[in-house]
Length: 359
Image (cartoon, rainbow, N blue to C red):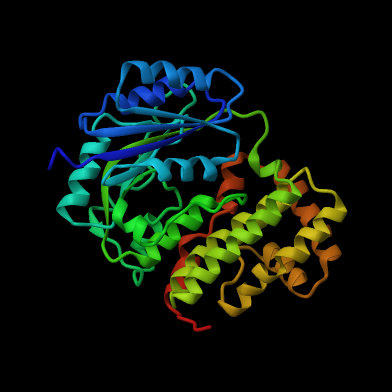
């Protein structure tokens, strides 16, 4: 490993004073020292900006940028604008690197001359206590090279997050990669486009990222506004067009199967939508659900199939009535069962792998 290869670690910061010190120190204390730490204070209104400045006084590797609030994508793009490293890593300001994360990822991307490398990650509690197992099963998924024609292993490892990865800066610059601002699912747009365009991507089973599961007062699944759904419709269209225009629609089918179920349950569970907004959202996302026919992707459960058919036919009021019934049932279900309902099972993916489509 060549010590003069610099890693730029981009950390968007917004109102995370309770977690920020742990986050920064997890980067400062890396076993690999040739890093620059770009802390982008995205208009924080708590003590986060001051904490960034205090650490910068004691470590020359830290570059603090204070900017007007513009959201996660804006903060990351600001970091990309000033990054001078040979490689780029992203770290959210309430999460953590393990001590050897940079060293392990750098060694792999250099040894394989990869465009980028994906590492395993593990959830932890708000207090930092690790969950029992990493997200990717270390017994099932060993180190391997990803392939966009591999709809099984590669699909499950090619997760949407930008944070458990190391990117070659020249690769990102060649693609003029930026995070799309003003929409949700910015990570998914970024990482799927990178995957489509990459020639050499590897996965290593080493855990290199700790994702803090914060206790929030209201679940995001029940607090999605109409603007969220309008934004996700734009984001999903970008992702779909990227796969379609690059003739990789069969890999997209797996992404779609997961996204269709996940998003429909978000719509069903949301408590912020008026009936009028529900009508507007379904009309706006009708194109997305119509893809289930074009892509030959069935719904995971019969109730969802009925709802999707109603949306496709433009019977939005009937669809909303059925959503209410499903919502009333889901309120009474344990969290684990609800989460499992939102994920296609292995048999769903197996059926997709057996058939290819063309659009």
